[in-house]
Image 1 (spheres, rainbow, N blue to C red):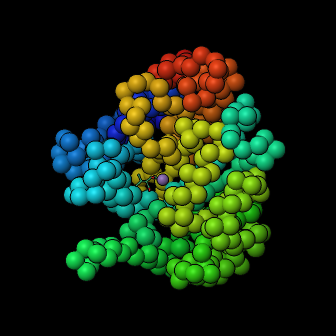
Image 2 (cartoon, rainbow, N blue to C red):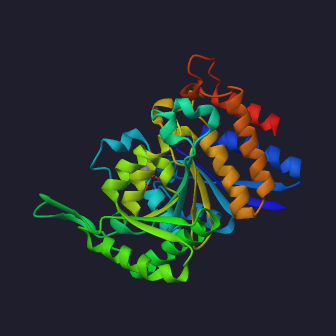
Image 3 (cartoon, protein in one colour):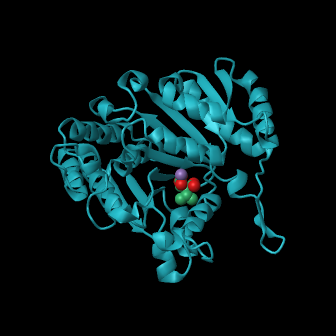
Length: 352
Ligand code: IPM
Ligand code: MN
């Protein structure tokens, strides 16, 4: 099969972790007889520096023409502490999500048997955890009208959702639940927020179309608590943009390292695959960042974008092998030898 993949390395550790995912993907392609064409394109601070814009039109064209997008990370500290910055790398990410119509962000959280004791949570609480967040990604407070008034003394960010936006996300949630344990949790704040009441009402009305799915409705504050108390009681969770942003960072801690969790963003055009961790600027260029989240994102890409389940399995198997044999970066190595990012990538590729 011919695979045309846009490669958006982005900022910080993005390029380093992306390199490893490319090595592993190329090894998989060789083993299974596929031909990958990687098309690199600029995003984030790297794109601002080069062309003054964090998601240039040329990058968008490349993404639209590709079969999938593999993405590293976006963000640079020189913009974080400068509230007056006119262009920010993150705007590129939001623009990309909007223009590619990536309305559903799929963020799984699972545990690796060999890493259970790396988690800050107790073994008996997290064993068997295997849940998926479907975070709405192109609406809500991230995209509502925002601004200042009263001479800058008042600031506002509006949270807006349409019924159709909720429906298309919830539909993916119900469908995913049908392929898993048929349990769906709708996370909202319907005791306070009107948008949450629309979410709840919309999901309730869809229940009749999926009679086998057992739906629970829980408030976001309670979910934040129960997620670290009993993560294995959840399966598929659907939620709006900001709640999903916060809860998926929280959930990533369960597995023991943020450097492990992959994600997929899907919607109207080309799907995008990226690690959930950020650009980790302190580690830029040091060859110490954990590449596994990006490598596992490539596995999601093989499976979901190309329907290549055996290829995805080959990647997941080799990742499990590296964890079991301790071929890991410093975030996971404990007292044992820490491997470099590039060494982990080389090891994975040669063990495919
Ligand atoms: C994420 C990130 C982004 C978000 C930032 C970088 C804009 O935190 O993908 O979760 O808030 O969506
Ligand atoms: Mn986030």
